Amino acid sequence: MIAAVLNALATAFDMLWEVFWPLALGFILSAIVQTLVSRQAVVRALGSDSPRSLGLATLFGAASSSCSYAAVAISRSLFRKGASFPAAIVFEFASTNLVFELGLILLILLGWSFVGAEFAGGLLMIVILALLFRWTLKPGMIDEARRQAEHGRHGRMEGHGEMDMAITEGPFVKRLFSGRGLTAISHNFWMDVTSVWIDIGIGLLIAGALAAWVPASFWQSFFLTGHPVLSQVWGPLIGPVISLLSFVCSVGNVPLAAVLWNGGISFGGVIAFVFADLIILPILDIYRKYYGGRMALYLLVVSYAAMALAGFTIGLLFQGLGIVPAHRSVAALVSNPTLNYTSVLNGIFLVIIAILGWRFLRTGGLEMLRMMERPMPDHAAHQH
Image (cartoon, rainbow, N blue to C red):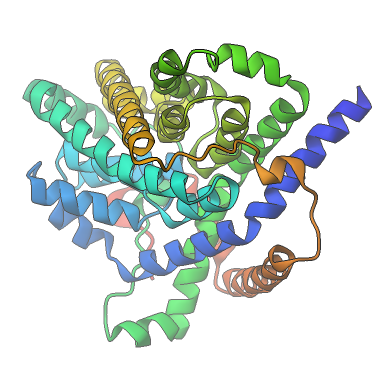
């Protein structure tokens, strides 16, 4: 028993070692973008559900935090401040499926094909979602959701949703390298890291346990690997369900996606699984608090449909183009940390993180974290 636990922990650590530097780089890039893009400018651009507004929602979401709970809180904040409901939800989906961190971790664990499929599929999923909203979302449902949203019920990360630490005055380079810029970057960086570290840790532990304890024969049977046609359909249908039940959100579900791919799920199934971080059970409960039970159920149904359809379509497209990897072995599941470029980059980014941590603590960061976790009225939004 002890040996099995140690084996699972070792596998989890191996995956963490492989993804540490790309994860850090992704969070740093995200923090820089958040420092330069004002939340108020986002609200002004998202006032309708026109193609232009939805396109801007996608762009701004991709430049936002990758934490699923923060994305949901920011989405409600945008909705309450005047963004249309479809634009707010599109922003939310883009911020967890089209961000730097996700692409970098997918690249390290699974390779270029998955990065391309994630971003192409993410855009396709947003288009499908926008069409479903246009065809099925009634004005009365939006009014009901807005009334519920105005109650300001507590979910998670409401403080994160209200904070706007963007620096908008002056030239780009001056803003970026000023003292205020470094402070804002350090605060955005640590705000994002503390938002997702539990989910990343849980995701790694679950992935390590499944990789170490579940035999390959079970996965192959469950994912219908002996039936090529059925498996292409089954993967995108079951992938979001596994995600829903895993409770792991944001980039924390990528290690588990690697285990599922190693076990035999279809290419489209992996993509649909990664998309589904916004329909896990805790987030569905937050939807219920934010927008009411009727809207929470509606978001579950349309989100699942968009995820499954996008995953299936991208799987078929990449299969047709001949760029689905044939080799299923995931390096992080079979190798141990060694002194190589990964170790060097991990060391470099540990130093950068330490510098950001020093700046964060010197500039009131701990108080900012306490504010992030509690609801904040609009007039008290944290400004720098």
